[in-house]
Image (cartoon, rainbow, N blue to C red; front, top):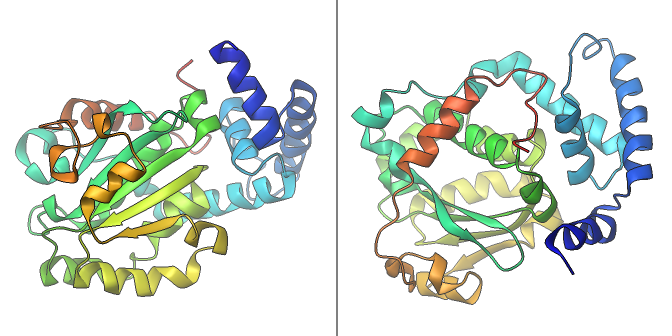
Length: 273
């Protein structure tokens, strides 16, 4: 089966998407948006709306609620969707906390690596971290293949300390979960958490009550980072996790998506292709 046919079959089997279902649901969703006083004036990109339908398996009611969460967040915290200053990438080493592994998993999922300990809280604010998280998810999911297959995420808490905790424990902490889970249309396949610290334990206790049981079941706490090889091919992983890659440098990639994010509007952006 060709790659295109495989993706079409996956859409139908896992997302309930067919050409007919897509057009019908999209029309219904657009009508609902036009009839909503808070969203009727927004010119949504067609691709952006399809993305919400896909992540909600073409449940129009759930998609509408998902979009409402996003619009509410935009109206309240719109600055989080505008990326960080470009010169941060040449002046602040903290931007290296986010990386994209160099391949996709066999199931088609890209893997994002967040190394929280690489964030220097004296150098970058927690809101800057949230901006990068938002940009990473929004730009990755402009790829239809990623919309269909979903993403996998690794959170490495090695090197985190009370300094990080002091900066995280504020009125924006809930956004670390709310943005990627409840506002941005992101299909999360697996979340792997390694190198447990007091920061992780505290954040998890605060965030866990807001996660659905479905998502909780997809969160894996790994006592040994090398156990990541049970979930992700070693050819994709850094050597410190038992993989084959000596060094991961995603600075060019994260800088590029941050620049793309500067063009993001409340109505979303079209797919890359």
